[in-house]
Every structure is written in C-alpha cells, then in structure tokens.
Amino acid sequence: SKLCAILPVLNQTLRISGKSVFITGCDSGFGHKLALRLHALGCDVFAGCLFPDGEGAISLSKYQSERLKVVKLDVTKDEDVFAAVNYVTNNLRNNSLWALVNNAGVVHYAATEFGENGIGVFDETMRVNALGTVRVTKAFLPLLRKEKGSRAIFLSSIAGRVEFPTLTAYSMSKFAVNAFCNSLRREMKRFHVYVSIIEPTVYKTAMGDKKIILEDFRRIWEKTSDEVKEDYGHDGYRKNHDYVEALMDTRISNCDDVVDAIVEAIRRKEPRCVYRVGSFVVRATIEASTYFAEEFSDIVYSHHISMITLKLIAFVHRVLRI
Image 1 (cartoon, rainbow, N blue to C red):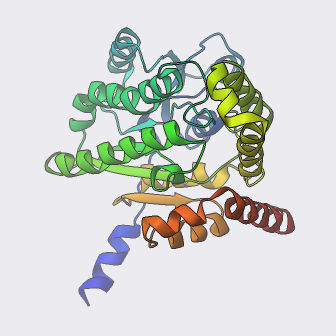
Image 2 (cartoon, one colour):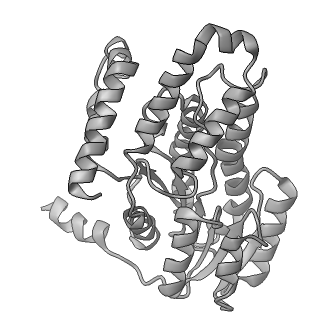
C-alpha cells in the first residue's frame, strides 16, 4: 500500500557527521548535553552561551575541538545575535548550516500579582523565550534556506499547551513559541526547511532546580506590594508555594530522552512536527485535560485537585524511579 511505501521514508535517518548545528542556551541543561552529544556524533557544533566565561562554557571549551566552538549569545540583544551569525557564517564548512536549535529560556514560578508593580516577570520571560527565539530564528533563516532539508528546532514545553497556575508568564511565552513554529513551518515548506517542536514535561535541569525555583519564588513574593500581600495573606502565599513545590516533585532526573528527541529531529529525513517527551503519566493527564470544557478544566486545575494529582504523579515517579 501507499502507507507502507511512505513509512520507511519517514523513519529514514541521515548521516549527520560533518553537519553544522547552532544551539542556543548551552550553559547548562539540555543545550549543554546536546552540544556534547552532537560533537560525539561528529557534528560541527556552535554552542551559544550566555556566559562565555561561565562554568558550562569553560567545560565545553576544554575539549579544544575544532568541531565544538563556544559563541557568546544573549538572545535578547541584536548585537549578540548578529555577531553570532557572522561568526557561524565565517566558520561553516561547505557554507551550510544543517540545524538551528532554539533552547535558551527562563522560567519564574509566581502568581500573576506577585512581584513588583508592572510586568517585570512577564517582560523578561517574553523577551527571552518568545522574542529571543524569533530574533535568533530570523537571523539564521537565510543560512538555513541555503541547505535543502535543513531544520529549525524549538524547545517548547507542556506548558505551551496547558496553562498552569503560577506559570502564567512561562505558559504565555511557550504558547507564543508554538504559534511561531507552526506558522513558520508552513512558510518554510517552499524552501524545504523543516520546523519541529520539542515538548518536554518537567526535568531536573539547572532551569528546573527546585532550590533555585523556590528561592526565586520567595524573592518575587518579597517584592510584592503590601496591598497584594495583605489581600492574599500567608495562606495565599503558602498555597502557591506548596503548589510550586509539588510541581517540582514531578520532575524527571534523566534528561536523555529530551536530547534523544532533538537528535532524532536533527537526523531524521522527515522530522516530526512535534516531539512530546517526558513522563507518560504527566502527558496522559495533560492530554486528557485538553478535551475538557474550560469550566471543567478550571475545576481540574483548582488548588485542591491539582495538589492531589501532582502528589500522585510524584508517587508514581518514585515507584518507577523516573
């Protein structure tokens, strides 16, 4: 049948040794692990790092490899992005870029009204996660379009499909990334440039460090106006804090499946549009909730039911040693 003839093509993997890949957010986490994995696979890796003198960048530089180059990159700054494009262009083999991986991101857990007056948390999150992604992608698209079959890959999140309390700013940014990716994928078809979204659940990366996240949450609360603090009270603070802590307890330790998904998107001849990665329990719960009416979803994501669900997921993860 036609389907049987198509499936082998869709599953075909390409030889990526010697291919050039640019990755943002390589200081730690998925980006750092991906840079090392692709280098081991023979790729020419350009690792964008926010802190070129930081621990993550230094550990990459220690390889002293011609195929692993650290590039200074703050995705919120035009000058950094333009300089990165120039550097990559001047150091490409065969003048072709095979893949761009948009991985850089930030996250803050806090109720919408927590923090200083104004939109500080929202502004930073959108500037890095959404606008930073657009800035980098637009700058590198001319290079990608030169290589038929090249691909742009985007680290999104399960929060880009479902809105979690205390993750409003992050969810907004990831919904924006998903919208950008879906539109871009349709625009790039004429150039034979593939666009894929990687959608992980919660992992134990530097960005998902429980201690850092909870300290950041407390810091944001301390900057909250007295009026808001009084209206929410200690009970409001504690409920939000406990929710964030419970969400952190559902994290997965092993990041390899996320890196595996990115590598597959890089070397599969016909990469998928979306790679949903992570805990099956979390993904099944989220998938089911997307079919609910909004009124029912509000009940499902209410504090009491959410806490029960998150604790159950954390328990299953402990039993399965995920």
